[in-house]
Image 1 (tube, helix red, strand yellow):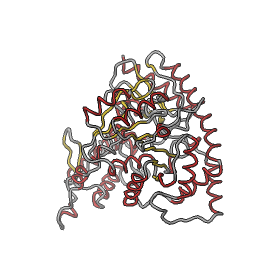
Image 2 (cartoon, helix red, strand yellow):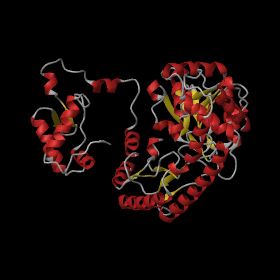
Image 3 (cartoon, one colour):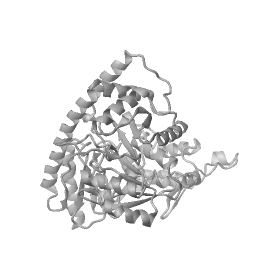
Length: 483
């Protein structure tokens, strides 16, 4: 989705279409819109700039007449010239070709649209997987930073594995959930996503196959694919990933690694049972298949603690355990961790130093304060209660508006409800119609290309009034399409 900070001045004596042509010319002359850049469709630009479409049509026609842009049916309108520079110099490089052939793949188109639309004003975000601003403890955060201001802390780079006092605090926390880990086996990262990036480039070779749940959050990312990996999904049931299929899939796919979210799985909300966790670890040990346990939702349980992490039963160094404060405290904090064998952690720490020379020292010191003061555990108690209230409200709302058009399970923690629509309809059309109505969805097919009748509904972000308003209107859209 195209966005612009600029808007034409409607009180100016300069005609609106002339202001738009001047704006586009400036973008081209400054090198911001290079040769081959695809301009937004007329209707889109008109909506963003809050003018009539005819005004944009006139502006585009003038630019076409000047030879600066070219419109072709089916391929849109592109920049084809920047005359004032081309007359005097060698043509600039075709940056679009560089973008196309870069190693890291772009986001899936729908994910890109979601990322853009999330920042649109007044949008109702029914699928966003993060805490609402109202659930982020801003008062306590101010208190933490105030306390830091009175302490002697470092503001330079930290050692490769991260701030030692933070790793010590995380080691203490891990003991409470059954994981014995010394600070030397912990690496601080900028969230669990960076952990996956480090693993993809540091431990796997191009062409490797990664096994994961089907559906999986991994399918909404290109972090492994950009490193030349292949993702293969193993079906889920109510107890978690079907571990009895792992041997078959590993043999067929020559898999190098298995990735799982056992606690309040993204996107389905499934909680893997204790028996399934032990079975999964036993089979991975037999098959010598390393395991990534992504446990970022672990602390967001409602009525009872989830089973111990898979890592708690790992006596052979098979499991790389990922944790984070992004889901439980603040997404902008950017503090996560990897727990694993020391040689692996040291290797990943070396790669991280080559990448960013360490996570924010200020965020690391703040995390120490959160964990050592007890404030983090007080916050967890509060956020669990709030999320449970939100879950119950969302389930009641679904019962009110979706009981005849969808089915779902009741999650026992985390952020998500995996909603299966009963009418057969185009998910793309539903996504677009909802977006036009100011409702942003996370379609199931970004997590599994066969899950085209599913939606990931999140109760963690939108306000209760927006959840009800959004779901009520969404049910009407579904019924309109299904007619």
